[in-house]
Length: 265
Image 1 (cartoon, rainbow, N blue to C red):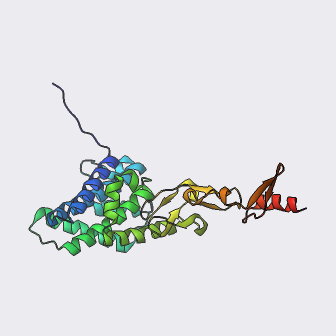
Image 2: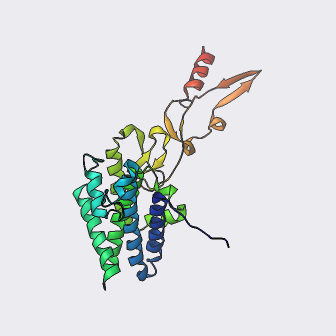
């Protein structure tokens, strides 16, 4: 008899719950009953992500009692260990911890008792936690959201207005946190936000996750998106007479300008 086994690492498990949460959130736009599952799965994704960061520091840290490693830490205990200067020393802003705490309380209410969930509140809570999870995965676990979610699913959740706003705030928070120089930040050709990062060849928008290649113009030496480069050779005002090429207008090209100056001499 063949035994089928489904096995996920701690990180993969967090991604699995994150993916399910987004599927639920997208489906909830038509079916309100999907919001509780979106919240449940997202909070579980947060818990597993926090544990993964602790595991990378030392596997024993994911356990509630390191002397008797049976039960794993709660979200509250995981955050405390992450912030502990003797362990990781990563400070999570108080407002972020409050958002997480409220989401956990909502999760507990959904799973342990009767509940009432208004759509506007569900969207707000989901958007806050999803944006934090995208930020946390990218900043501390070094996994970007486009490598977790399929592109169509990612773009669908970004289109939720509240979610877009939260992701926008987190994108700028990450830029500040990583001390990225303004010279490496461009306006994104997709969403228009000043969040497209070209530092170290990353070439991705921290908000909408649009990607694109930057290239150096061989004429002026400036960098731009590859789609902004255009061949203007057919526009050059030139002529060919008795075996001699003549350029009448260099159109700002240093190379052509040099050739034009030489011809005039």
